[in-house]
Length: 298
Image 1 (spheres, helix red, strand yellow):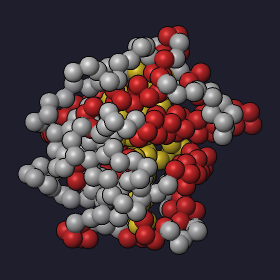
Image 2 (tube, rainbow, N blue to C red):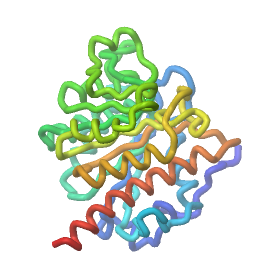
Image 3 (tube, helix red, strand yellow):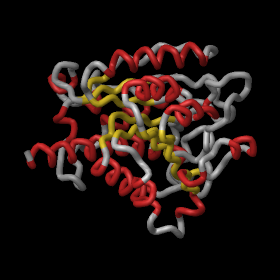
Image 4 (tube, rainbow, N blue to C red):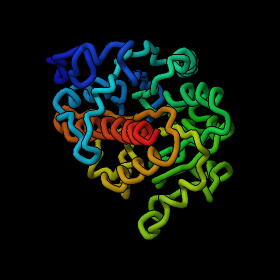
């Protein structure tokens, strides 16, 4: 079968090679193409290629921030080699790789794969940043202590992080009864409550510590916008509220890293791939917007 996501460049979004090498880059982008524990829709291991293909076809001037984030440099790591049938080994490899990358002093960004790829990444960040807040944008709580025989299942994605970090959950609209024991409802913003709460963004940000890691499962978006996930739940968030919230976090807190997970591309619908590409680029724009403002104030 012909590859529908044939790339024309070896750099992120086709940026010039001098901006895509490690030395000149402010950002490292690491893919963890693992989809071994997903329980319904498959294909998240193919998401990174679709994301890169969409990124190559994206205009690189961000209107909102009047900036070109790519000029800060983005280094495209070789995707992490992971075995489909070994979630524990995947988590260990992701953890060790993140430990290594944390010494670089660059902004670390990660791309799934399913949401279990965040477990090892978050473990390393929690060790480096004490009193870390993890902001989880997601349709699902992902707080099961174990599922299908492993604590490294995608349904357990933030269970470990909750024990080690300050966890804020946004957009939740699906969970198992067993997770009621673990959910902290004062820090969980259910999708159905967000609709008629004009202050949820402010409220949640006040509950964050200074250092923040963002883990964003694409199924946080309404399934009409983002059908290309393993479990596209109805009743999700819309594009502009998510961007508004992310920009507020980046402006008010120190975002030390982020990941985007669960893109399961559909060759017959490229819109979700493009949404994902724009989302990642927007997050870079918000990150550098704050840095630029800080530098101009000094």
